[in-house]
Structure formats: structure tokens, C-alpha cells
Image 1 (cartoon, rainbow, N blue to C red):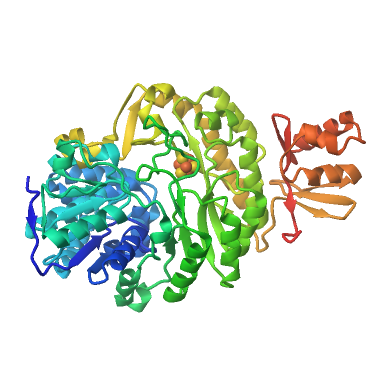
Image 2 (cartoon, rainbow, N blue to C red):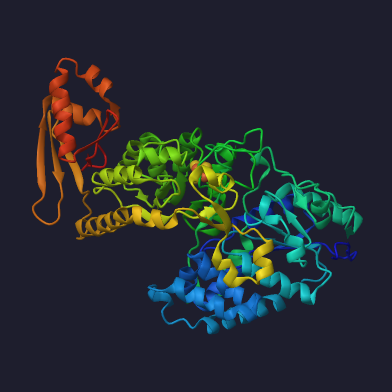
Length: 624
Ligand code: SF4
């Protein structure tokens, strides 16, 4: 295995590559941020960031690219067939299975698609000057594995002396085991975030003009360091204020080369933080956080940019690239500083379209600030509508909190695209019954997306399978269709599979699946028409209020609440314990209050959980 490289004296360039299949409509924040950091550190170094996936999207058509990029197995099979041509038939079979029912992929002939993608890749390889390069770095996240491996192999065939460094969420921790033996074209792996290890490596390489046994950089894993069990720790920034705004120039330059009908206004990915404040590392290598989550394996701890930096980066990049759509890539937006950040974004006086991921505990007033600043769409960590199940997921939230934030989004006009996880291992009939009961109350709100649980490498469930009734864990079987047997057996891939209660879980969750479908159908029907009206809304008449409940089929219902009934209903716009309600309305008498609350719950105008109550109707007037 060759790990000693001599660099030419003239090598003063570094290449960063992002292979298919990330979202084509956004530049890669990974290589954009790295480029900006390296350019700041080494002003005389030329850094070319190749957002190559955009070329593939342009070649095969954006709609088709998007359909493929949305599903891991569609994405991984295309380059899988190029990487291992002898396995084309099995890759093709997986592709067609996964493409079933998608009209955008109906007419695709897999082998034609693969050969079209090969041509674009060949053109790309020919168009890049790989010589006189210090190193070529590949950022590899979900859906980019086979494409990156294919490009690396093809480039390395032609330029055997090129130093190849990979990084990204696919190659952290357990995933690097056996990597160098299986893919000898790869010379080093960045474990965790890349800024510090890569800049240190670049600095060493420029000084010594060679890479080999002497290269020992914290955060960089090499064949030698894995043999010696050394240098595999993280090397991450303590303070994100050292970061410059991502450099997306290469992406926008590429887009400008396309014909007018193929250009569009991209979304700018931005980050306010790294890691997740809900997840904490524990001393013994364990961590807290959600049981199914493996999103934070490349970070240690949680760090945020400061308010000023975040706001000025948004201003700078939207002005520079003349686009208004921004997607925050944070696993979880910061909560403590959100108020100031979104107030600051609002003061920019730009009609931004923002997207971000938040926790269900985000208070209404923060959501309102986000909306004012342009938050159009959020993904909330809802995951379940059963508190019993949320405990098993270690989500730290309850069903009533989930329903409350769904309601607030509806009221504020924020599109909530969140998931409901089905078939979580260890879930039981009681979890399903609670979910079904609670789904009776969520009809007025935007339906959740049904996702089946998948086992992520390194997640708490994967690390402690026995706690969740899992008997064995192994690579997902689709990898066996893509990779040769010896690779499948020696590598640990991101998507894992397991044995233990799968069939039972599928059966258990079938009624929830049906109910979710019915919810979506009814929600869509009730929102048909030219005027958007919430399904359950109220108008306040100062000492009475009128609730309007849209129904299908049949007439809509109206309810009038007067005096104290109105006051209680308004008091429970945020969920309140029975104790607090009784204290607040002590003059009325507890029997009357409890009877009223029960009636509201029977009519599905309020939700109750563990003696906590939440009014479900949203103000018909969004300004109230
Ligand atoms: S799912 Fe979200 S909140 Fe939970 S640990 Fe992962 S990133 Fe954090």
C-alpha cells in the first residue's frame, strides 16, 4: 500500500470534490466552508471546489436527478454499477425496486442512465487539472459513497501519485475500519470536521513536500495510524467564529455556464451551529440524545456562531449571489440565541425564505420571531405522537408538546415537514394505541410524513441493540447487491439492518399507516379551494369566541364559547396543567371547569394528556 508521496515543488493547488447525489439546487456547504477556511489560512494557495453533482443534474435533467437523490438506494446503485460493472444486474434490480411508483423514473432505462452518468464523469475527470495538486479531498455524505469511490478510482488510475483524502459523515468512527485495505486508492481520512486537520496537513505537506510515515496529524487517519491505533481522534475548532462565510463561487460559476433554460435561483446552505445541544457526550464514550440518531458522529459537543456573525453571513451571501432562499443545515437550530439571531435577520429587511430544523420544545414566541424573519418551512423533531414511545426514543418531549408546536406552525403559516417514525424496535401495542388515539386530534394540522425506522451505524440503538429487542445487527442487504462479497463483509456501512421483531413491528404499525394516509387525504380535501382557511380556527368577540370546525363530508360546525369558557379556551392556547387552570379559574369551581374541559376534549376542540390541556383551534386572524 503506497502512502509515501513526494510533492512537486510547483504543487500549490488543492482540489475539493463533492460527488453526486446531494440536492442539486444548493452548493455544497462542506466544500464551500472548507475552501473559505483554507483560503483564509493560506492566501497564496489555489483551492478549486468542484460541486460536480450539479453537472450530473444538468446532464440527466433536474427533475430526474432530484427523484434519484431523494432515495439512497436509487443514488447508490447508479455509480455502484460503474464501480463494479460485474454487479450491474443486481444494482439494476435494486434500482427498479426502489423506483417503482415514481412517475419521474418510470421511463428510465438503468443501463442508459449509468452510461450517461459515466460520460459526464469522464468529461469531468478530463476537464480537471489533477496534476500539480497537493491533494484531492472528497467530501462524502449519505448518497455520495459509490459516486465518490468511482471518481477516486478513475482519477487514481490516471494519477497514481495524487494524494486522496476523504472526509464527511460516511467515514467517521466505525466506518473507517478496514477502509484502506478495501479501497487502497484512499490515502487518508479526516475523522470529524475537516478545517483544522486539513489545514495542518496542508501546512505539513507544503513544508516537507512529502506525505508518509512522518505525517501524524490529529484528526487524520492513515493506514499507519490505524495499524498503530493512533491519530484517530477529532481535531475540531473550539470556536466557530474562526470560520469565514462559505465560498460558493465555484458553484455559481458553473451554473452560469449553463444555457438560460437550465439556470435557476439556488438555495444557500448556511450553518449557525455544529452538533446538537440535546446530545451530550459522556465520559465512557457513550452519549445522550435520541436513540435512533447518528447525525452527530463527526462532532464532539455543541458549538454555535455568534449572532452578529450569523446575521452578517446571511446578509453577505444573499447580497453576493442575489438569491433569497437560505437553508440552515444545523442538526438543530440554537435555542438560546435564536431570539437575537432572528430579530437580527428580520432587521436585514430582506424577504428571505428560510428553512431550519428545530426541537418540539421551541416556544411560540421564538417561532413567531422566526416567521417574521422569513422562516417558511421547518422540520421539527416530532418522530412520535405517543409519550410512551417518545420516552423509548429518548426524545425528551411529550405528545402534547408535539401537538402544540404543530398547532403553532399552522397558526403562523409555517410549513411543518416533520416525520412520524413507524416500527421503532421495542415499540409495542400500547405505543401504537396511544398514537392512534392522539391522531384523532391532529387532523387540523399539516400531516406528518410517514418514515419507517432505519438503523444508523453508531446510533444508540445500534450500539445497544439488546435494549431494543434486537438480536443481531449487520450491513443493510442492499449493499450486498452493490458491493462484492468481500467488501460487503469487511466494511461497516452507514445504513444497517437488524434481526429481531421486524415482521411483528410491520403488523403492529399497519393501522397507524392507514390513519396517516387518511389524515393526508382529508387535510388535502379540506384545503382545496382558492382561499386558505385553517381547519379548526376561532374568531374572538372580546367576551365570546366562535370556533369554526371544517369537516368532510358534511357541514362545518361552529361553537360559541362565552365568558369563562372563552377565557379558559384562550388560557390553554399553550398547554396548561389542570392545577394551573383550576388556580386561575378558582372562582368557577373545579367541577364546572373539569366538565367544560371534558366536553372540549370530546368535541376534539382540546387535547388532554396527563391532566394537561391544550386548545386546538388557531386564531382565524393571524395577527391576533
Ligand atoms: S435527532 Fe436531532 S435532537 Fe435528536 S440527537 Fe439527533 S440531532 Fe439531536
